[in-house]
Length: 198
Image (cartoon, rainbow, N blue to C red; front, side, top):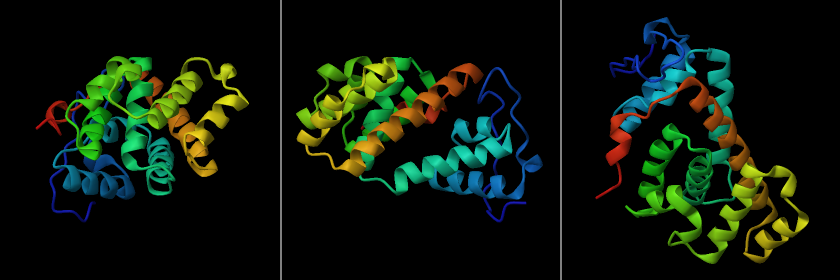
């Protein structure tokens, strides 16, 4: 049982193609993680409800997610920009909406996420970020086309070797996430649509 005082109920419509488990039936560590996220966000993001379908995968997924955002040579705004550009190319509804909200919050920009989803090449971003997203989208759309020149372009744009690794790692992880979200037909919470727009 979770130690949190927060009442948590997992949304039945978090995903359409697999059943969402009952919160009280989950292992204690999942209950604790979901309750903490619900406390922090004010609602339970549907990705937590959906991934709870398979607890071992939930643990691995969020452990890697946490490593990507907590041990990064990139700013959180840059991580979320990559997620939204990649998710835009992949047409992942869940990640476009959920991470679009995070772009708006971390970039403190109510317009940027919509620009990135529609066409990052015309978004109001600097040249370094355009280079970053060029490489992320190439890795997404045509991974065999990534060349040493792409890494050199990132170096010339000012990214460290660690940051270049992180660009690829975030891109790869969210290609996985996009495909799983689309396969399961995960639905973003209504709250994500309006976060960070004012």
